Length: 128
Image (cartoon, rainbow, N blue to C red; front, top):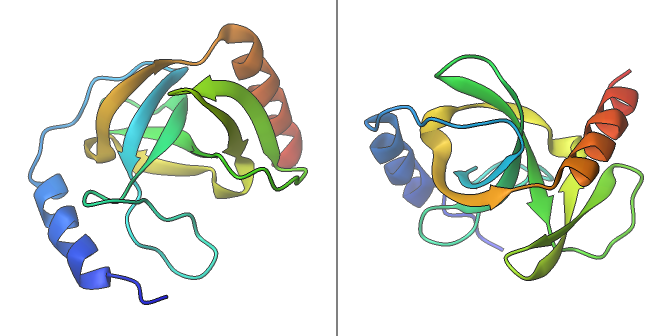
């Protein structure tokens, strides 16, 4: 499959010109992850987005996110988080990353406290 790096570059230029977003930990956002290399998680659609959970804030310009997937493939670093926009979702901890808040496109909602706490514990353990 051919990747549209040039199309992503145009979206990235527009994204860079925007203002930082206000966010809160535990929120789920459509995030412009872009077109990436190899097994790195890509976004989809015109804006190259993927749902992500805000794990931690680093001020108004950056936050730690974990991308979500609807893939049913089992893996130790894929943690079930429940329904997101009517689909069973899993957090893909192998793709945990810091992003600029301008990549956040639209807020979807909040992750419930229990799945978020379980996700944080799993993330802390996985990153040791």
